[in-house]
Amino acid sequence: MTAADPYTVIHQTPSTETYRHLRQAAGLSPKTREAAERGLPNTLFGVQVLCQGQTVAMGRVIGDGGAFYQVVDIAVLPAHQGRGLGKKVMAEIAAYIEREVPPSGYVSLIADGQAFRLYEQFGFALTAPASVGMGMRKPNALAGN
Image 1 (cartoon, one colour):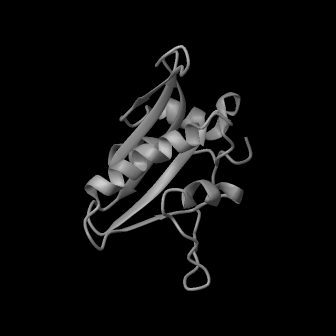
Image 2: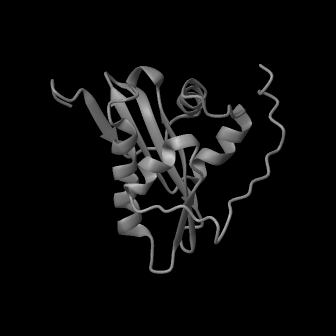
């Protein structure tokens, strides 16, 4: 962190509270406390960007640690968007992928809206029409709140 760059990067999974707050504030789907408490300990790699000691951006890599990995939870607080923090988070994740994913390992992600443009800068490519992502979501009790 410098006067020119007030942000500090740490390699750490966010706390349950930080995770839930950042997801919701950044416009991602909310997660229950139970879902966060079960999922976060299974993070393979977590990165947070701090400003004045507060987490303002995050990202995680999850998976089996060998064959399959998924980039998830790329989120930046609205007040800090447009400052390259998503790119900063992805640069840390890309370094982890380069260092830790073995040959033949497959790394995937789901890009919302135009976010695919960010991910393309780090070697990700659209898979359609050769393959198409699919998902199944359990109804979220928080969605109506």
